[in-house]
Amino acid sequence: MPIAGKATLTQYIIEERRRHPGATGALNAVITDVSLACKAISRKVAHGALADMLGSATSRNVQGEEQKTLDVLSNDMFLRTNEWGGHVAGMVSEEMEAPYVPPQQSPRGKYLLLFDPLDGSSNIDVNVAVGSIFSILRAPTADRDARPEDFLQPGTQQVGAGYAIYGPSTMLVLTLGNGTHAFTLDPQLGEWVLSHPNLRIPARTSEFAINASNSRFWEPAVKRYVDECLAGREGPRGIDFNMRWIASLVAETHRILMRGGVFMYPRDSKEAGRAGRLRLLYEACPISFLIEQAGGMASTGRRRLMTVEPEAIHQRIGLVFGSSDEVARVEAYHAEAPQDTYHAPLFGKRGLFATAA
Ligand SMILES: O=P(O)(O)OC[C@H]1O[C@](O)(COP(=O)(O)O)[C@@H](O)[C@@H]1O
Ligand SMILES: [Mg+2]
Ligand SMILES: [Mg+2]
Image 1: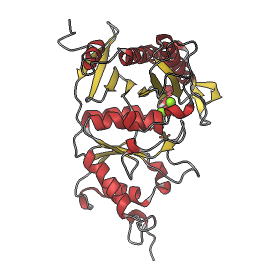
Image 2: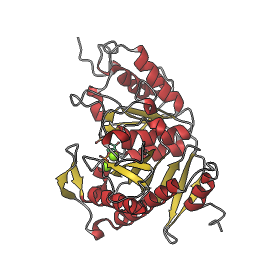
Image 3: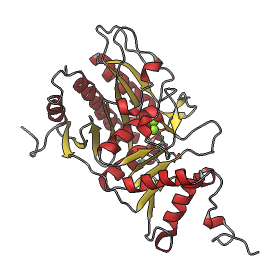
Image 4: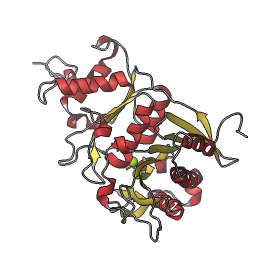
């Protein structure tokens, strides 16, 4: 019996399976296992300081970032819930240098799971929303253990993707390639309830999100786009824009899925040899899949993000996503502007901060 007339996650994925007559239920099992990990993480996050879970672990992850206690614990939750089920042949995580291959599987799992177990972890200690992001790929072969190169598949190959957000309420947002749907965790029942079926992102928006402290490292096309937004009603866009920055990709994505907007963590020159801040396989690809399935666009700034052929499991990339008119505009500015042709009006000769001649 549906809760308050709404389907549960279990009911939804069983219904989805009917679209694939040959399906064995293994994908549903992976989603169930992931959603169990997310419930467990949600409980830990909700206890905050009372669970003695805040603060930093003593370790650093493969990208040299300080690991929070909850980063390590959340990673463990994902590994433990999924290795037991036997449906994944290997897992890649932000928190592990090499893929994890579950022991003694026979037959081997059909799927590969990639995840950021705790996204936005700099927000944990200040009690702001964090989340978990996941992507599901098919394992290319069942004949051998999963290898790093097996995970190097473009986003278009994802069979499922989603995130959990641990905010005022806990939600799971999922796509299996048939729309993007949001489930709210009923804390009494411990059940995910389909509260927001078929999310749609409006094509137009007047809200953007970017870490403006990086502006001196941006490419000209991004500078131009942001300057035009900031110029508001008096500028070329003719409308006032609002700006947001939560420093939590999951929370920014959630806002955009709920009411539109554009998010940018573009390629920049902040660190030599680093293409962008976000990780391609377990941040940018799953978010892009969710956004496209909700009618939005997701781009590197220059091209559709999900067509990028990955080269390394922890590869970083520029990401621009959200309302399609705005993402298309950012792509157009990149196509138009050779690297050195745009001069920001704020700092130009006749700009706001120009010094008297
Ligand atoms: O420190 P910045 O530049 O605000 O970066 C924030 C970005 O970094 C992230 O926190 C990276 O995620 P992790 O917390 O998983 O490392 C994104 O969620 C967010 O968009
Ligand atoms: Mg992250
Ligand atoms: Mg993380």
